[in-house]
Image 1 (cartoon, rainbow, N blue to C red):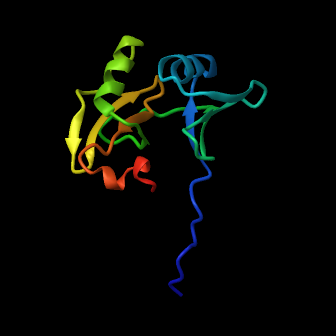
Image 2: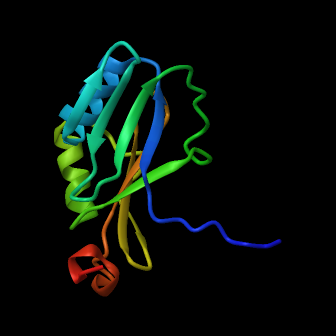
Length: 135
């Protein structure tokens, strides 16, 4: 029985964080993601990720910070990753490295205090594949 699971799309992305207040400050104030809601009792906060329904759900809990080279990643599409890197630096967020090029464009990555990696990627080298091309 080799039947594929029919995936309809991404529901939410969940990251564990040790300190919800610090994480909200990082994601809202430094990365500029819109906070949808915060619930202190269960220790969760949800951020909007662009115009699509899925969001980033932060959950207070135990975190194990792997090395950045092996950590799971969430990449967000932006119009210009190199511009995003400069904006992040002005907000006090130092990228893990300078933006680097890939076949579709550029990527810059940052990490939160729990070691979760967030990448900002663009499709400047292949715009027909990006969201601005209607995909």
